Image 1 (spheres, rainbow, N blue to C red):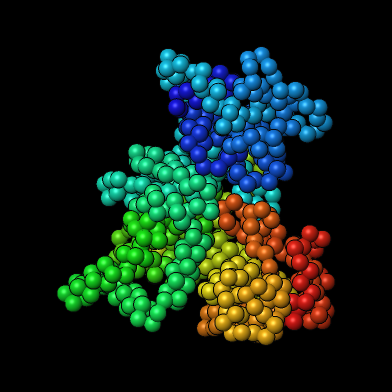
Image 2: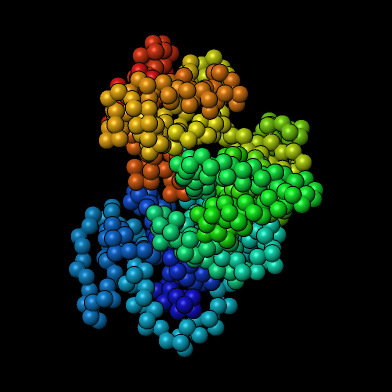
Length: 617
């Protein structure tokens, strides 16, 4: 397939240095098109299937893409106006063409020569390629001289804080990261590796850590149908390695806990006993000690009766799970490690580092829960403050050096220069993340841009507070706000299913299972209950000034569709604050904050709900 794809791409004029963009979800044709493009010396420019049209246009213009591959006819219809003349549709009889669409010249993209659909155009073109032609394309592989420092992939940052930037990743960058993954999980340790791909390949985690890494091992990758079918897909595929994000595990954990809670007293006791025995066993293994015969027998019996049933929720075969994108909750990590026997390998990195910089190891004795592991092969990490390394264990900005660090941002010299620093006579990438290094183990503590001062001059690290709040089973998503203000406010998306069930169980006056979200979120007893949850989640984890003093309960979640989540499920903080700007302004206005006008949230008329009535919180 790759040979045929190379032939049709070369026939279309694709060669060294050209940009081939893809607007599609994960599919076989995506991988084939990527491999064919790279072997021709072209640069692959992936975009998310849910990419907003304005972002898509920006990326195509900025990258200078020559060819766009799209995953559906719908995507073709949305993007066809980027061409001066639409491409010929091979589904028509030879010689027939689609009519030319009259477009404003400003709407077209001069570099873009054609748009192909994976469902129609690509199969039709490849069907005309004979075995001889494909063999000829393979024979011509050497004609595209690909050097290690040539740009292989141009990934645009998700834009959680502003305009996306094109991250230039070279062949050396990508291959170095794959070598690092080989050292962490050796092929002989998982000779029949099988993963279920649901993380988008348009992101460096899905693309390099999973797709390229698994392909380099000759391993198998099954494709999830979509995000809504993961639960059934995982049971059908039964992967033994799962590349995931913390959100997945949090959702599975909550569902398991809900199911346990709904059981009878005896069943709940049995599950609690099984988990407790499993946790004790895990600690003994972590310390390198031998288990007593009694504990071993208890574990085997309870594993057969209880724990094996819990493992079935993830197919029953998952042994290793590299996790990245955000921080895992410790209780959730302990549960899956002990009860389900999954080695959770928390990792850390950025698009600019291909992406992996550090990751936990499968060996339980050298895996430290709460950290993101040790540096991968070739990576050097340092924690820096004011241009100097800090003493071990102290917090500072994480700097990284090594062959996995990107070449630069496309056409952005100033931003590229600002992303690097000099230390020890060497060039380092400044990640913008805060962390500590102890005995080689890296722990993420926050992000510089998400660290702000309150009006009293005291610092608040928003992600730390948000992480604590998310420990509550009644909080699904949260964004903290309060820079230059006297107190913090939390924008909270509750776990509506659980909150509604709680209201029904408490028989709150005026509420029922059919009550609207508006009725629930404004009810005084619900507000009091959420206050209790917030206090409990923050207790003993932070100072009082860091806790949110006010909050808004939001009816709609942050999603990709409403542009408050990136396709890799990161919250677009600036978009959320803008959307709820008027409600935030009203909170501080009501609190008579004299200094507030200088720090007012940018307002938008597109806010989902006015939320004036929620100010009683």
